[in-house]
Amino acid sequence: MDFLSILSIFVLAVFVGYYVVWSVTPALHTPLMAVTNAISSVIIVGALIAAAAGAITEGGGISQWLGLLGVVLASINIFGGFAVTRRMLAMYKKKDKKPAASK
Amino acid sequence: MEHAVAATPAWAVLAYLVSGVLFILSLRGLSSPESSQAGNRNGMIGMLIAVGTTLALHPTGLPLIIGAIAIGGGIGWVIAQRIQMTAMPELVAGFHSLVGMAAVLVGCAAYLNPVAFGITDAAGAILGVSRVEMGLGVAIGAITFSGSIIAFLKLSGRMSGSPILLPGRHVLNLGVLAGILILTGIFATDSGAAAGQGPLLWIILGLSFLIGVTLIIPIGGADMPVVISMLNSYSGWAAAAMGFTLQNTAMIITGALVGSSGAILSYIMCKAMNRSFISVIAGGFGAEADAGGPKASGPAKSYKAGSAGDAAFIMQNAESVIIVPGYGMAVSQAQHALREMGDLLKKEGVSVKYAIHPVAGRMPGHMNVLLAEANVPYDEVFELEDINSEFGQCDVAFVIGANDVTNPLAKTDKTSPIYGMPILDVEKAKTVLFVKRSMGGVGYAGVDNPVFYADNTMMLLADAKKMVENIVKGLNGGGH
Image (cartoon, each protein chain N blue to C red):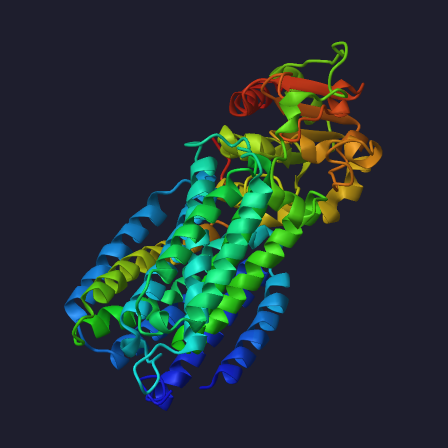
């Protein structure tokens, strides 16, 4: 892909992001931050490439270890981000279930 | 570009695209609580596809990679299970720092082993455009990292929340920023850098770490919702920059989504405080508070103090109560007791609603999560613009741990630092019950609140949680 095609995807995605995020209800802004955090860890793709390539190309030693460290950090984020979002979203309940306030 | 990137097979390109689309759907799901969990699942599937595709394309060194994923995943999983909901702001700040660091590591790895990333020309030199992307990606990543670390330290109370003002900080910051941009330009054109040599990238990296710190330390605690949103945005742009380097659509789409998401949240937060983004970034807000505050001084004004028993009696006999929670509720973990109080009142036939100001708490939507954690149904929780007109008809406004967001001076006093900020009109309720630790503190903006001294206000001076628990006791025992 050439630079201009990539730039086009990027610009369109910014607009998609703009409209999608405005439709997020303010009550879910904290989960929004947690989930955007998790998905921005897609940067793990770059870390994986470095870690994998370092194992076969010579002189890729440092690059491999940087990649592996990147994989660890991004994985913390991916698992942590999605799990904590899930935990938060499970708390949002509607009124219909009578809260058990009997003591 | 006839190297590894051009060799990316069509199925992989499509797989990354699918993963990008799933990330869009994951955010779209958050438009309502019902669809949100499905949205989160889409995000996980998208991530699984992106990681699976990458591993299938580069199936070497797998044992170490799987080990790295297991270590990171395990740590992340445990943190996510253990973290308290009140600690969510510092958790998110901490997570942002990791994204930033990961971006830095990827950028450096690409610089050291450009062939693996397919960013070299026929002669083996790193492409100029890739060097621009790399320089920017590493810079944004480093700023995200060190800025988020400072935000984390401030939010978790390990560092004072009050602004630290370096002399000449604007000149310093602008100078360093210009330096980073100029060096990135040189880095893109320098022949040594093309061969992967020379210290330019490392200097850019060092300056970016530095400016991340100096940008965030002057920003005070009350502006943290903006800072944390802004860092959210930066982490997205860092991922997008790396996506350009790798020519990976999943990364570019995600980076753009996260970048705009954080930018929109920053905008919403600034708007809710009637501050300009520039003035937040410039920092120092809340510092003038203890310095002078001529309008806050003067003779001690009289106010009415009440007890938990009085509050229980008033609310029992009310028809409608609107509860206004703020950061103080989070600090004292009063949300569970508060829900119990709400339940008891509802049993007595009182209508109970919750009113949330956009900047209540330390991050966007913080109060909503805490109330949800305490099992408050989300359809009893209202945003400022949806409920503000109801204060005029309600019997009791119960303010707990909020202050500036209820201050009517924002509407009238043009000299006030919070002038123009949209506020919750609690003073229009027949009775205002104001839970506050003491009469001493005056909120983050350092402004006195006339609601304290109004005839229809009763101050409930105590720790928020203790006060609510005592009110609950009063409601339980106070009946006939």
